[in-house]
Length: 219
Image 1 (spheres, rainbow, N blue to C red):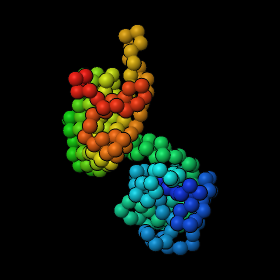
Image 2: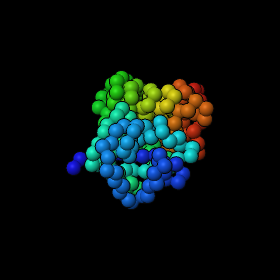
Image 3: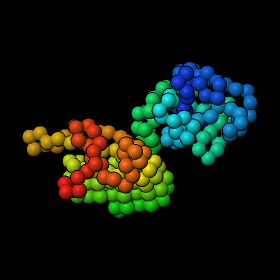
Image 4: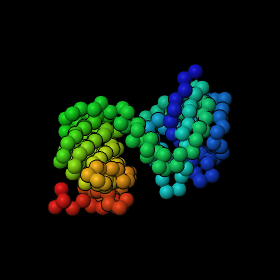
């Protein structure tokens, strides 16, 4: 029997479409599932859950679907669904990062386009850019920078690293410190480019665990 791992959103009572769920339990419906009509729904791509359950008032879980299966564009409907574990908003974001970076076909070029594309650059003052759904850009090194398009992830590591992205993308930045001439990661934070708290097309760095706009003179 085919099993599909994915992610599901719920309201604060762990309900979806008036059905009560419970973590650690498997639920069955004796129907032929059909997207948006019948069956129990979930998403394979973690961030797709936001299309149905907004982050400000929802709960999120790892799930496994099986039995009869109906697949749509951004969700799946099944006759059997197991609620594996509750992972929360941070779990969804971390899963999205892993999902993207595991699927990306990495290249040493500084830029890449197309779905599941990826660009990686290493070295001081390096930069990487990627566009397309579920794409990723990774830049490592002193004063390195990474940028990503909508629905993508930009990862910047190294001392004084920075990242930016379009609305709907995510940035992951490390904050480093120097101890006895060695560099260590002090903190790592993830943020979604929402256009309000985190601006679009604006370079950010991490200082004292907080996202701040990167000073152009420092880069």
